[in-house]
Image (cartoon, rainbow, N blue to C red):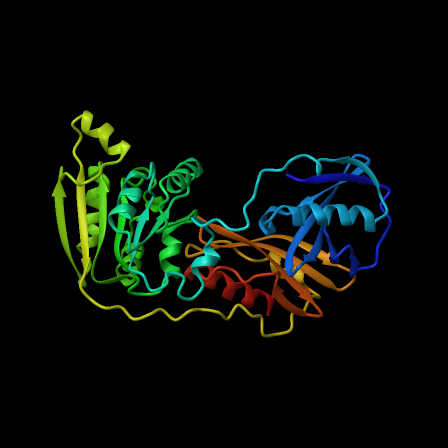
Length: 387
């Protein structure tokens, strides 16, 4: 992580420009400051923390940008603009290589763009693990686009290497919560969704991928006659999923026990050696779903009375089951403006966002939140509290 330690900083008047880096303002809290930075239309924060006799300056991780050279430039420019004494720097150390574009690994913003699939038929695999099944599907379906979703970093790295080594070009990888991802997709996009050997979470059922909400979203995303395929070695997970599937009136259901398929995972091979049963549940979508209406209104269309802002935030009750909302910290900008740090959205993948309140107008810093249903509910609650 690039960072510097400075002492004897001169006060600066914001906004100020140094070597193409704009420092817009400094938001101050009891223990740290956030410095708003703009460089080539990219916005992020540097954190400034006093430790012993010097200030530690580094980037704020939830606003991190790529490539890392932008962050290094901002740190160097801040050192210059404050005319400060440099106590320590690791900016000359070789940082991990970061690619501006990766032909396989994409972030969630990529999938929010229109026509990212180039009108190709889509197959989705959730939790691809070793990648055997994912790579097999890609080779068997060269004219389809395969999306692999995984949150285990080592699995992602291994599959990315295999994709490059085997010169497979019809795969996109996403490190994201699959449940939220399906919410964000357009209807009738995919012909198949695979969920092979998900973590059963026998003692924490709420963490399971498969749920009534997940199934409804999967069927919406599937084309007519498209299928959702669950494969598991957990009888408890299978029974749980089958019970959910049987509540549907818009799909037909097939079940198999110990069915051989064209390719098996390392995980499956291990269980077969121990003669463990494997269960398949296939849910076929029988209807054409209408497209979801995209939510884009993350605006605050009112003036915020900041006289009792801290009181409003501190009095908020967190006893809500449908979404997560935590007011993490309130910063002061100058004498009358504020910066509010919030954690919001889905419990399993919350988003950290900053809300600028300048001249009594509120706006999200840099980008709107990702519009999952839980995030929309959290945003509406923020509006209620600030209004």
